Length: 154
Length: 154
DNA sequence: CTGGATAAGTTCGGTTTTTAAATCCAGCCT
DNA sequence: AGGCTGGATTTAAAAACCGAACTTATCCAG
Image (cartoon, rainbow over all chains, first blue to last red; front, top):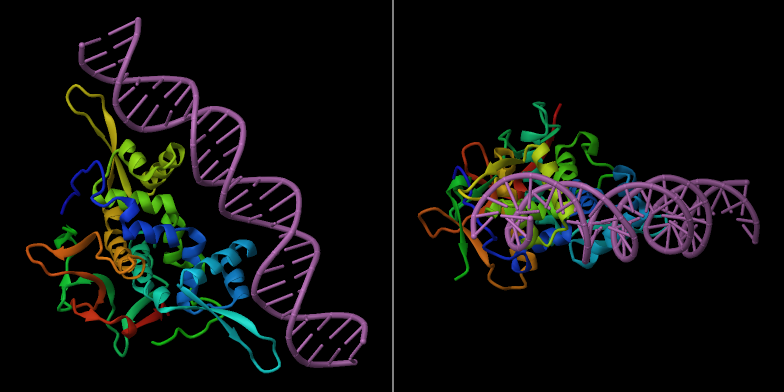
């Protein structure tokens, strides 16, 4: 797969494409940065805000959008002697983005890291074995990217 | 890995995080939609524009940014009797995003597709074997997402 | 009770980006 | 020359972002 064949139009129009739908939902800078922070375990409004430097209006609106879309769950947490405060926790839907964001981290490691060792890497639990994002077939064996073929629904 | 442990701050600050750098570079709606179209083989300005409905100013600026960042290569194509026109072709850097975008497609299939068969799926060349985004260890064997552990550079 | 601290969220006005429409410009053909 | 194509630029309005200030509610201490 040295080069993708030229097409004048994608085989699936953006209207019906689930990738385009996903991009419409989460494909903006603040949303992606919020999801990143959530994947590392950040949950509280002020923590998102101070880590990301995101304007409060924007943060509030994005968190609400992610909650409404089901990617985050808003929970109430109350420590003794403190008032109840909200936490924004990834739902199963949101957590399913973890592999994609780890894959994008590794893309960034490869191409944006300027030759430095990445500040964070990922291993298999209980071993030092580095893991990387890839594709597997139904039996769990790796498939190289150049072996992948798109199939249109017939 | 039922729940990600709460942290007040990510283990890697956004400044030094390659994921955050990647998000800063490509994490906007039009850029992602352009990359999607490019991965399907769209190369020409007008084709991007008509497929995406992207304002020409925005498209021109985003294509330039992607060329400057090295994700796209601007090539000159000239058919006999026609004038030279530019094509925007994915570089190796840009093409490396393919797995991430396929993974995001499958995330969209799972959560945004509303129970319908996805309009496009992906198989291994020469077989009907469906492939999916996953993680593998150094030997190419699948690692489940709940087995993945982040490791900070020491 | 009052006052202070905390923290999630809102308001407000200025700035920047996006947007739709129009226009420009260059290379090709007739 | 005129017309067409197609990449890029200009323009003004709309939308989104942004920084700063403010509001509100819940807690504790004095």
